[in-house]
Length: 349
Ligand code: DAH
Image (cartoon, rainbow, N blue to C red; front, side):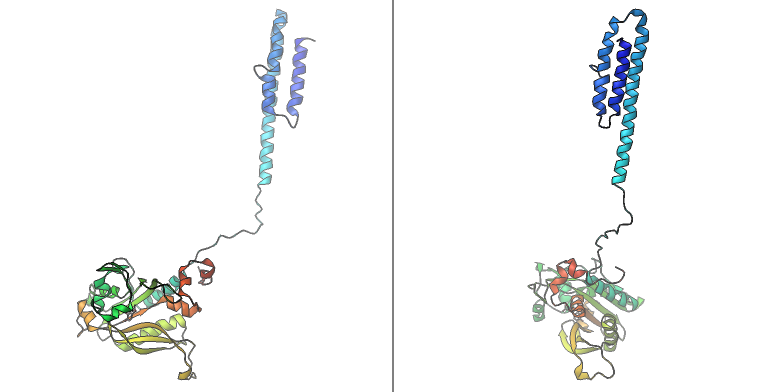
């Protein structure tokens, strides 16, 4: 056999190997075309070829090299395409399968109630004060207590166990200080002051079913000429009916707060009241404190109590939520258990 026959045989053999389904193409490239590969080995026989034939044999050698290289490249391409097809088929997305929807967050139930209260009062022309300048959670003793007519030795301070930061700085125990912060800046030439202040308050209480060391209040204050108790009652009735329903009634009971005189506690009827309901059948629940602002408070805020009168109220969204939804433990609102919270899914959330 001549060298040319050997080369042709090699070409034939390489082709068969390359076309084998299981061929390792890189391995074959080394085996046939590598520096120590079969082609190189054969071509070493050139030295024995008569000089006149060398050119032709050399050409055949080159053709075989090219053929093997091309066949390898071609096969490589085919394999890559097949692999791509396989992957595409394996990773096809079935768009008809039902999707899994991500868990969606929602507004916390207490925030829902505060939003409801806010939008009600906004509709009645009140300002909402909730910025850290006029409604800071870290307050001074002066604004939290003294300006609310609770001097340092006042026994009513005991009603509000306080987290003190320093003797003069504390975590506010009530949203009432916002009244003074806003009132002292109010310009009455622009009209009466009507404001609410929703926010967090803190008390040094041990947490239990009805106490939380942090809870919420919404403070309200209206100051103007001829502001009366009837205005207070009308305002409170409107917010209670907004929260509990049109057919609920309120009643005012005498009470005591240092910053109001007279002071009242407000009850709302647990059930709906119709013209046929007998008064003795109505079940009342206490929902908030309120009253006509004490002249001392007005004076301390630079307002003439002879000219202006005012009413104030403080309500607790946590308590409303407990009453409205029959929640018996206030701590539930603060545990961030989504199984609990997701029950109060306001529409549109
Ligand atoms: N600040 C009172 C409290 O935390 C609640 C309150 C009662 C606020 C009567 C008022 C009010 O504005 O008039 O117990």
